[in-house]
Image (cartoon, rainbow, N blue to C red; front, side, top):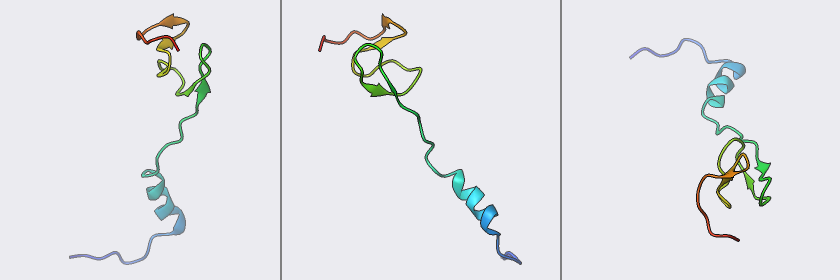
Length: 60
């Protein structure tokens, strides 16, 4: 089985490892209940998105 002739440079090996890293997702506060969550998604706490109710949840 063939083996590599030379070792990979630091930048080349770190570039490959960067693809495996979990991406950072910014958080935002919900405008209705103030819970932190992902942007551009329905709030998991109250079920609202863009000022209207998308998922029916019990009132808190």
